[in-house]
Length: 247
Image 1: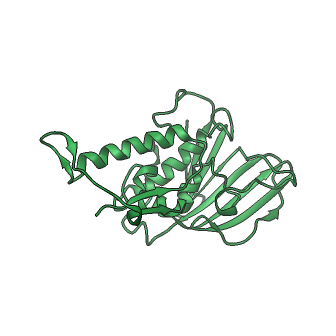
Image 2: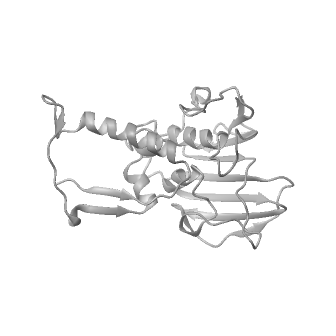
Image 3: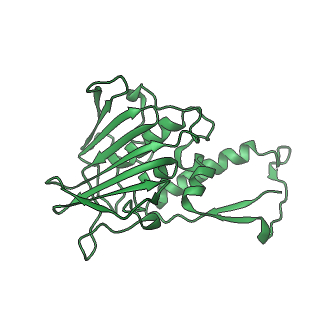
């Protein structure tokens, strides 16, 4: 008997979420053993309350990575897709973060399953001058695609700085390990998140070394030649790391 799963996620990027859901369901229908190909209709299913599960956001991401990253858990491209989606959304922030392309994004890759992404945007502060809280009381706001990547990470560190104040918080699978701590903020504003993808979850996957092949814009970008650029620094061979810049 099938189980109907609902994920509780509150994101401002509704259009992209809907597109991913439609694409995912199209693949599911095409490959479903319950599809009656001779007449093109689905076999009848009935459900009751015992067969409905309400998943937390991070559990929902892990159960259905294809809805967020476009590939299944067992696909060797998954780690690369996580990086690509995070960088793409850093370059094209949600309207709640910024109205257009980020002016700069810096990506540091330290291992096959570890990377950080920094950009020049930071969410608004609350009345006490602290970052507004997102999922599970973390400083990683729901309007950022980074939340889905944190859900498949064993550990993530979030740093946000704005108006002369900086805040850092460690997350374990998107859940705060401790309250945010202040640090000496750079003079501008920005956000940096470091991800350690869960090796138990990514058992057959690694981030590609062909960083020039990543699609940083996707189908929703209407201005591929817009402002902003992404700098990749790959430190996996030691030293300062190979660097390339993408627009």
